[in-house]
Amino acid sequence: MNDSSWGAPPQAGYWGPPEMGPVQGRPEAGPAYDEPEVQQTRPMPVVPDVTDVQTAAGADQDQYGTGATRLSGPLFRDEMPQEPMPSAAPSPSGEPSEPPRHAAPQAGDQGAQQAWDQGAPLAGVPSAPPAAPAAAPQKKRAGRDLRAAIGVGVGLGAVIIASLFIVKAVFIGVIAIAVVVGLWELTARLQERKQIKAPLVPLAVGGAAMVVAGYVRGAEGAWVAMALTALAVLVWRMTEPPEGYLKDVTAGVFAAFYVPFLATFVALMLTADDGPQRVLTFLLLTVVSDTGAYAVGWRFGKHKLAPRISPGKTREGLLGAVSFAMVAGALCMQFLIDDGTWWQGLLLGLAVAASATLGDLGESMIKRDLGIKDMGTLLPGHGGIMDRLDSLLPTAPVVWLLFVVFVGTG
Image 1 (cartoon, rainbow, N blue to C red):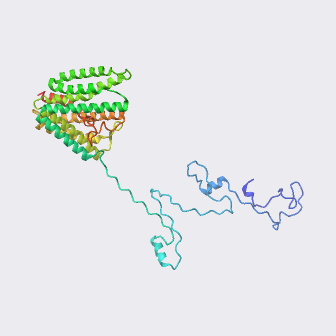
Image 2: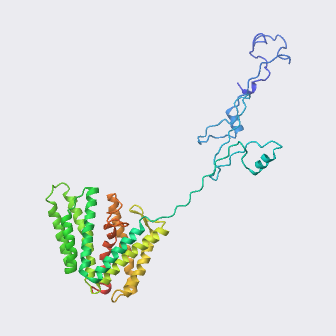
Image 3: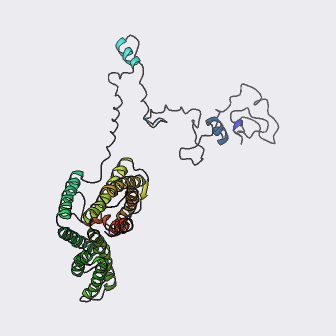
């Protein structure tokens, strides 16, 4: 039945009560239904169609975006819509909107009227809570204890320079001690995190002998000592059960190459006539490269260099390392190295920046595989010895080779 028939005058043939009018199929008894005096039944309220509701409500959709029709008005005529409660929904700008004001004060109350005009809260009316103060921007901080790092760095530099320019043999002893401590840190972390038992005793003895052999017998002595150290690792591991033998000896040979063999190239630099100046140049360029990368990357770094390996390194930091190292290389080659020129220093600085960065990333890869942040805690502000040798070790053969190419073995 159409909703428009509700409350309309009945037509002929209406099926009404027998006492109030004719029934279909009977003759008309009189003008009972044609006379306006006849009392009609109370009209039922009109129930709007879904189409009418959509038209009246503007085809509103629900807040979840389902597309379902939402009835925005009363369903029956005798229902009165309730006044919506004031909401504190945020404004389009993201800030909470101003709460609605209450009723204005009555006439005659001048103080209340003036407060109302100025937007002040009225007595007895709760005011909106004050907005929380904006958080102050956090200051960018370095990722290490700079005081401890600088203090330890200055102390190590003093020991190295004193031993380097006073007695060369003392400096060889410093290298050997650093190698042994580095091997201890590396093997300890391998055993803790991966259950790899690389034999420390043959590595420590062979590593120290490798450095001394390189200084005394040159490159040939270093290669022989490396081979004997690897053989000692294979034999030493045979005294234990065979389970894990392959991974243990593989890690031992890797440790022998990674730490003492690469450090031997520093001893090879020292054998030249201007050996102390070459070693000093090597140390200065590596430290300057690391410092430039750290300073520029911390201040201007935005683009990650290798986020999966070392999230803290940036491309801007790499540019800083290259720039600082090239300038320092030009100065060192011009004023410290015999027969050296500034353009050779530019190439040397570029090579040092590249090798130092790769060495740092290489040890970061090892530490990420092991699930550790530092190799040790021996040096406050720096970590362990291996955390300081990471960029020095792969840079040593590069610098030694470029010195041989540019100015000879000396």
